[in-house]
Every structure is written in structure tokens, then in C-alpha cells.
Length: 255
Image (tube, rainbow, N blue to C red; front, side, top):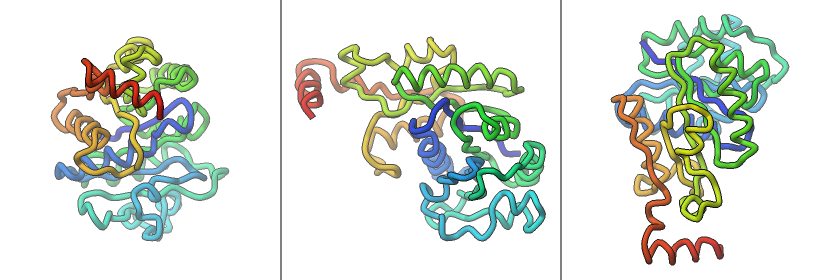
């Protein structure tokens, strides 16, 4: 039976959809059967990030309204055979009840190991629809004060749902700025939001990254936590220790 995990954030632009998609890829690489479900109606970017936007014939609303069976709405990823996408609807004003979406996901759950639910940012109707369909939550934020303030509001809202766990992923972390004390460390953010830290994802260019990148390693570690229960987080500031690290910090500051 699939674990249904909603991935959410307090504000847009923190990389929530990228985190959802990359987590799905890394879980699939471990052999898990994964659905990445896009419930951000109107924006529906998950299939774009996954590179399958031209393959979807149906979306979640088609399944809800009976135009197709739930399984028919899934798109199998061409590179990762155990990874599937469930697209959202292009009409942002379409009302779909949380109960209707949950019925679709519950019908699919016995055939999969994970269902990752990409939620709209904020605490409007779409957030509640996504949260109500999930059993667990992963809250994504960045070290910026505005993102953390909005994340704190979402963390409070998540407490009203019967979720078995709520974890934190801090995205777009610059190790040089953490080392200089210019931004809060992920551990300080975790204590501020009173949430366990599941992932620290460094700032790098790109969405799908090569396995040698720190960012890709961060997603592998996050997938490892969901697979085996052991939390292992990167420390992007570590490479800025010592004399060589000081030189790197200076070069980074000048970029």
C-alpha cells in the first residue's frame, strides 16, 4: 500500500515542485513504484519538470469525473519504468473535493509504494485539498525570512490534519553564506519551525542533475530516508572550512 506524502510550501518559488519530482525520480531509481500527483490546478508543472507533458491523455479531474479509469490517467516515465505522473487540470477554478481525489489515490495505492502529492503553495483551498488526501507531509522552504514565515503558517495548518509525520526540506542553501553567518543554518530553521530536518538541498543550477552533483546527492539521501528511515542531511557549509574553504568563500562572494 502506497505511502501518500504531500509536498507543500508556504510560498511559491522555493522549489517545491522540483523537490517533488526529484524525490520521485530517486525513489524510482531505488526500485520503488512511484506516482507523482500534481494537485496544483491551473499551474500543473509536474509533468513539465518530469518531461512528460506531451504524453498525458487524461488528468486527475478526468479520473474523478469518470472519463477514464484511475490507471488510465497515469503516464509512465520513459526513462524510469517504475515512475508515473498524474497530471492536474489546466482550469484553476475547477472545484474538486478532497474526498473525490482521495478516492482516486486510494484506488491506485495498492499497486504502488509511494504517491507524492505536489500541493499548491500557501494555505488556500488547493492546499487543503492536497493535505486532506495525504498521510504524511514534507514542507519545503528556503533560508529566506519571507519563506520561513510563510512556512511557519503552513506548519501550523498541517497540525490540523491527521498526518503520521511532517518533515522539513530546506532548499537552495548556500554553504558559504551559512559559514559566514549571513543566513540561518538548516538546523536553526528546523528548530525555529519545530520540525525534524529531513533534507538539506544546496543551491545549484538545473532541475535534473548528474549523480556527481551535491544537489543530486541530497535527493538521494532524502529518498533513502523514506526508504529506510535513516535521516542523513548534507552540510553544504562543510566545504568552506579551513584555508581552502576561506578562498572558496571569497570567490563565491565575488560572483
